[in-house]
Length: 401
Image 1 (tube, rainbow, N blue to C red):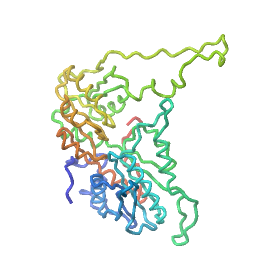
Image 2: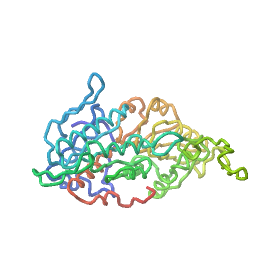
Image 3: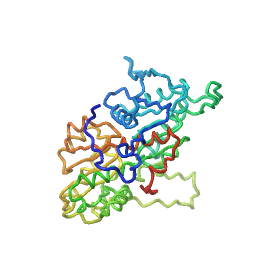
């Protein structure tokens, strides 16, 4: 089976040596009753599912997912899932709303086909950036979490054929990776395993970046300083933070605390009372806290989509004397003209994982490199199916990681 080029570790990751199927050939042995489906109708999105199935030593389940002429999604499961553990792998393509419907319909189809449990494997959770109230907007990630937990729900009853209670929710478990905000786990009423890609990115730095000991980990804004600190402490490197960027969409000025409009209503409060107003923020000049002169700058974040802030950070670091600039992120959405802008920028290399397919973007920009994370996803599936503890996959992971 041939896959597109993706970097894999040259030696087992210390955190996941137990998941290495080469040194531990029995680790890919799973108990019977396991079915893995890919919920994508787009062939380019099935690559990760094929990698996971190959690592587990099983074949992908037979299912047809396609769009009809009127753009309705149709799902046809072509093998029995009765009494089995079903894992549905769904990666995000450009048409994010279609992939959500594909997942929900497939979950419902497995539920009505009497699957024992249905586990969603969604490496990149869509709408994760919309996890806070924005004035008169909505928390869309909460809505999506509710939809995933409710699709196909029906009353609990006892199956006399299998002598076990049918579960009352559709999805029974969710596996994802590097949620934009960890608090999104609280939107679900089912177990959520938020895996981390940082061990793979850290090993890429150690094996693929020459003279990485002369590097400094950079946070492109104070909001990503905790992630940068985590990388820096594990690599025993210094840290730098860029402060004074143009305000991004996640600042306090655009959340619900400034709503409704501040109109003085004499009838609403007593004339002798006047509520003090918070002093508005003033954007300071762009500064880099930390020394990057004559160093390799490695910018770390969880998502790279709109690259404008990364390009501005790269220009700032070049002005401060950094001679090489890398960008490391878990999810490479790379929308719109991102590949062209990266190719023309001061950034030397962009490293992302294969949680989202981006083969087209790699053809447009050779600077984009891919790290394969199918190892940890397949090990998570194996452990859940066999009823083993998941804590091993979260060793040495702190609250701020």
